[in-house]
Length: 127
Image (tube, rainbow, N blue to C red; front, side, top):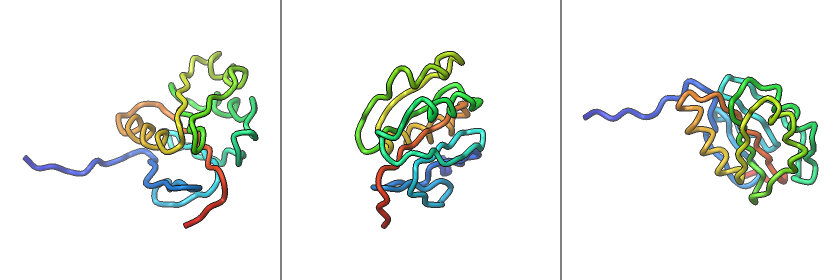
């Protein structure tokens, strides 16, 4: 049997570490949203405490079925009030630490799911 490496036809997270993620091989040191439909934008928050309803309202405008919220180094849940726009549009939300969110996004996007990852990147560490 011949095995071939997985091929992604969608944007994917190709690496991560403390204070950064790489999307399609390009490192970023700030919070970012990536979606399987090719959408990608800076998320405009540096710490969990910076998050609010406007950040999640941006996510409700995406054409996705599920948002994976990477809450930073630690697993932290956002306020239910932040999720109102997502709930109104029947978009699911799963919360996990950012590294787990990267892995989960890659799996679901690779399966062809309409998914986005909102990745909180804390600190400005570089390597």
